[in-house]
Every structure is written in structure tokens, then in C-alpha cells.
Length: 75
Image (cartoon, rainbow, N blue to C red; front, side, top):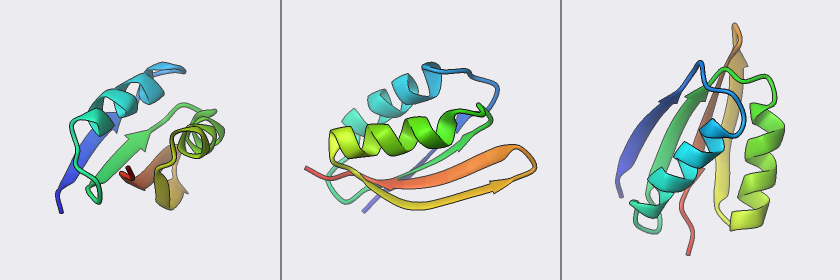
């Protein structure tokens, strides 16, 4: 199982989701993608994207305007 980090701070919608989509295509099932983003709409965007794409949102936390998520790739 691999773990990849992606820095999306400073990017506005839809770019964090675009970059996450590209990164997930490179991962294997079960791999984790750790993402940091600062876009205020990121939480709702990532929750909707995970539901649509079928991946798992393992964790979400926010501190000082930076949102951190861990995603797990599913089939």
C-alpha cells in the first residue's frame, strides 16, 4: 500500500478536484492519497467527489484555514 501527498493549497475550485482525480488514476486499489487544500468549498467538493467516484474519505481535519484529507482508492 502506497501513500502519496498532494499539495493543493492556494488552488480554487475546481483545480483541487482536478488534481486529485489525476493523482488517483496513478494509484492502486488500497493506496492512500493525503491532500492539503485551502479552498473554502473544498470540504463539500471532496465529499461529493468521493460519493460520485466510490473512493473512501478516511479522515478530514481543518486547522487555520488548511483542510487535510486522507483518501483511499477503491476499485
